[in-house]
Amino acid sequence: MQRLLHFFYEYRAFFTFLILQLLCVWMIVQNNQYQGAQFFNTSNRVAAGVSGTTQEVKNYFDLRGINDALSEENKWLRQKLEQREQAIQYVSLKLDSVFDSDMVERFEFVNAKVVNNSTARFKNFITINRGSKEGVEPGMAVINDNRAVGKVKTVSEHFSVIISLLNIDEQSSALIKRPGHFGTVQWDGTDPRFIDLKYIPRHVVPLVGDSIFTSDFNAVFPAHVLVGIIRETRLSESDQFHEIEVELAQDFTKLAYVQVVKSRLKKERDSLEQMTIVEPK
Image 1: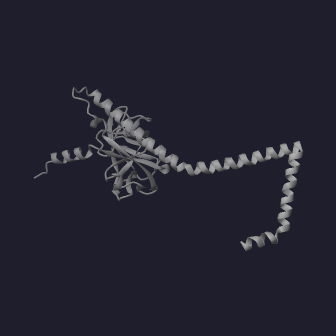
Image 2: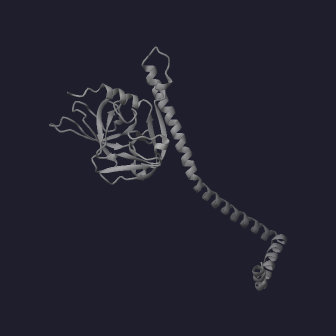
């Protein structure tokens, strides 16, 4: 306290001058209409500028919350879309049995943020901030707004590592929507924007612009998840299969959020298929 008083005493002349200056400005503004109007306009501009800058800073720091809210909304919409698709499929079967809600709700979605992502290697992986604590397990599909991303490889309590579609060891069953023929998509390790569609026989006529989706035979992804669009096809006289280049729907260099797909029926299907396999004697 004594230091503060000493400070004011030492600079008493300056503070006296400052008070007198402020008093002069106040008297000029109060007694002169033009100067008062100018002061009022200037102070309003300064206040508006400060307020705008403050709001911009606040909005910037609110972006994380907004992104999380949008991610949760996407999760909810994805579940509703999947329920509707399953309901349509169910009705189209014209079954006489009572409507089964379990069939409609085959999938559950877990929102996750990408914390690490590689695209420049032959075997690329993605790390997300969700793990076993949220129910994530190896083998689960990973999508982003109905675009195929990859599948879960390993899991810890709070993180998971995903095998990206940009991995030369990863293969997935796919479908050309227009002719309805099945093939396999696999990355060749070159351009992260494109992936190859294999094993489409020569009698099929794929066209540039055809959409490629995951198929019903896919053991990882739900059916009808978009993989990409055909950009080029090649077929020589000696080839049995087309060489098809697909432009990926997902831009992996901008991947920020994903959804992990939890199939409620996958374990049942895998268990039944495993029981059916007869080992050769």
